[in-house]
Amino acid sequence: MTAADGAPVRVGVFGLLGSGNLGNDGSLEAVLGYLRAEHPEAVVDALCGGPEAVTARFGIPATRLHWNRAEYRTASRAGAIASKGLGKLVDVFRTAGWVRRHDVVIVPGMGVLEATLPLRPWGFPYSLFLLCASGRLVGTEVALVSVGAAEIRNRPTRALVRWSGRLAAYRSYRDAQSRDAMRAMGVDTARDEVYPDLAFSLPTPPASAPSGSPGPVCVGVMDFHGGNDDRARADEIYRRYLDGTIRFVRTLVEEGRPVRLLTGDRCDASVVAAILDAVDSPLVTAAEPASLADLMKEMAAADTVVAVRYHNLICALKTGTPVLALSYAAKSDALMAGMGLGAYCHPAREVDADRLLEQFRALEKNSADLRRTLAARNLAAARQLDDQFAALTAALFPATDHDQGHAPTHAPTQARPRQESP
Image (tube, rainbow, N blue to C red):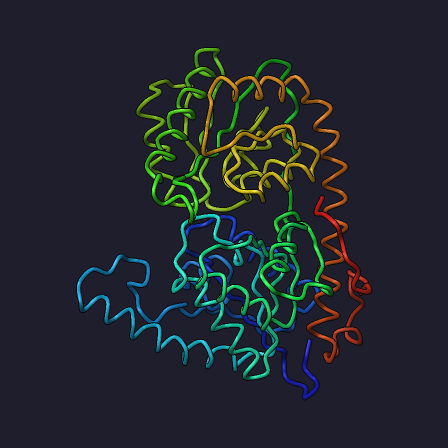
């Protein structure tokens, strides 16, 4: 794929990638798969949180997102605070310079327009605003692709997210409520579309044949302390979540069920350690997944899954494994409803082990029907993501010789609104 002047199209990818979050890296993997299949001559690099990890895993050059290497450490001394302030200024020029070197910049999925977990406005919202503003200033198109959004109360964060959305050249969302949230925050979404999360386009491992007897249960955990509006009771939320999860796991073990603990971010390791310490049994083991593919392999071998993290839920759904969501945000409820499992959500902030066990038993009782439902919904998701990638090509690469070079596998489609993700 080349630009009108004959040079290869330069594509940048942007986000908290390579920083230990498997869902974020899975979204990058999906977009790189699309680019390599549809635009193989594109020159791709990243501006991201973990450049060394991104280069090692995905084989693309990567630049550190922040000039200040201590960006995510708490600054209490005057020198550290001054360094952070200087870093914010330096990042204005670093970001603009990086954006200028590209024809297109893609933000692949992720919840970049939400604050469902603790978030400060001068953190990632500021970085995203710099990206989108730089794109508008230097003439580089910035695309927010199948991203998550939620209405934000904090005024500075809300303003940065709103302007990031307004300045982006292309926007699509991973669920209808994300589009609604951006509209409520003052972004014109009339031409924006809704598609499934990008992770639904990743390869799926084959499911294990049912054993005929109660088999393993995967429990996806999270270092969960609530969201941006829960800071005052963060410790209480964490303790209630952890205690409820421990009681749930202990009951499964007492019934002779093997339990496999899964993470979605490196910070979740402390929760795994706490559960292993509280439930001392050889039936409880912990995996060390390094990718969404690793998570899917674990879940494909399980009878059922109980999980908190959004992309842990997606991995279970994608493998066709019945899953119960410990839901910490409306995005999880929307995902489960769209995939036909809306009845199997439990609030992560208010874990009630007895109620959780009751829902779990109902999930297992209806397992066969749910697996058939998931098979159909996954086919629909794959078709809709074909549409997403075709729309992305039509929107961002219309001046290339891509169509003349080879026939695309995704036929371009006219933009049309979608009401919900699958």
